[in-house]
Image (tube, rainbow, N blue to C red; front, side):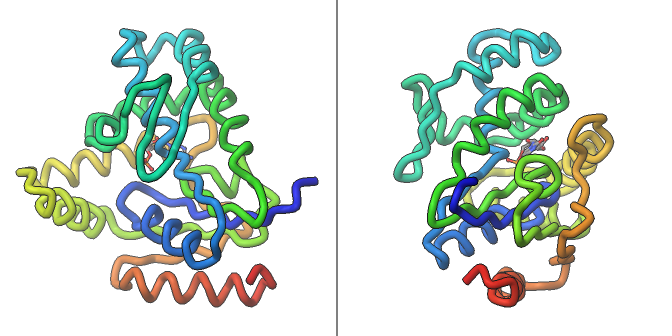
Length: 221
Ligand code: C5P
């Protein structure tokens, strides 16, 4: 048994789970696992190596052999800097396509579990509480309406100086949600024992306070 507690934060894209996970991990001094980044890396490497997303065995083999490092805000894969490449809207789409395959998820699972080490881990994704760390003492499912999530993403991209269409983003979000929620393996859904928080009309600070008070109530802090 590994002596490290886990807090899982799952939810759809744009719900704020990445920001929340970062704040909680920083506050507690725990490790952070951005599991979506792993699927984004697999998608990006498929594009670079010209492996079709539907070529399940090849994608799984590729996923299992990657040398990945997250250090000082940089993502390095097999010696390549993929930090910016995995953050595009296309990379999110590609991730969602490779993530549908059970063989690919199995290959990524080992990697995800290896992030668990003392003093603790905050893991964000879609199936952290349901599949990867079902024993976690605190599971959060962070949701928000598709319109609010599209609006948040729109602002983020605008701030980066990128020109995007709000309507296009909303369509993409709905499409990705449908794929993530409807897939046969590890679909996006709250664990039976998850605390569901709807952040549509909440600030990130409000969500953070609620999560930290739950962590204290469960003796994690
Ligand atoms: O969270 P992020 O937007 O980076 O995730 C990209 C895609 O990776 C998601 O749309 C989802 O299909 C997939 N994913 C997953 N399981 C996770 C994390 C991400 O299937 N635990």
